[in-house]
Length: 267
Image (cartoon, helix red, strand yellow):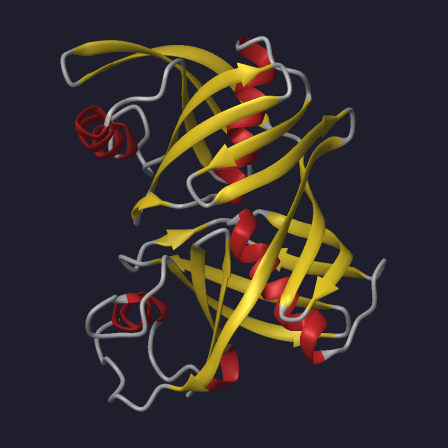
């Protein structure tokens, strides 16, 4: 089974064509994404390519389904651009469980592809109080094609991050779970984040989480609507315009090979 691995700022994904997949998505995700017994990744993308586009179905490393990943979206778009030898200014459209997303190829440097992705309008942006871990946290909750919970303020230390991240991700307020970002507005044009991703845990980066943090910072933290968002994996640019949120950053293809281990049989 052919597998392509790509990452965006350390947030890594394995891409498998639908025709090559010989097992159910959840079981295959758990097997392939295991960092000791598999290849290792934050998620699995099952895809089918068309002219200047693709469809994708996304699974987290634990086998749970996810509606969208901004970084995974770019990883798949990079694969399309590579296979179809697309030039700068070309548009790639990807059908996701959160709708059709369009990306403009800005530049290519070797196997690294930079895109500006139109991720649409943030949905249901509001502030709520969440009791968790003996604290009452004020959070901005919203949807960026997937559920997001953003805690604005100074970034937590490792102990607090590892305690609150999973508790918020699985909080009863979010029946389907949520992605969690801790976001500190360092300047009107710069936001620094830590990420606890639903179904994965700590991640170096998150595209939709980057966008969610930027929206929360602009709506409730005094930030501008055009900001650099700095995660442990690097810096992406977010522009919240009248017609939606645009995310600019790169994805890099790093591996292409064959999975030869016996396929998992569980669903």
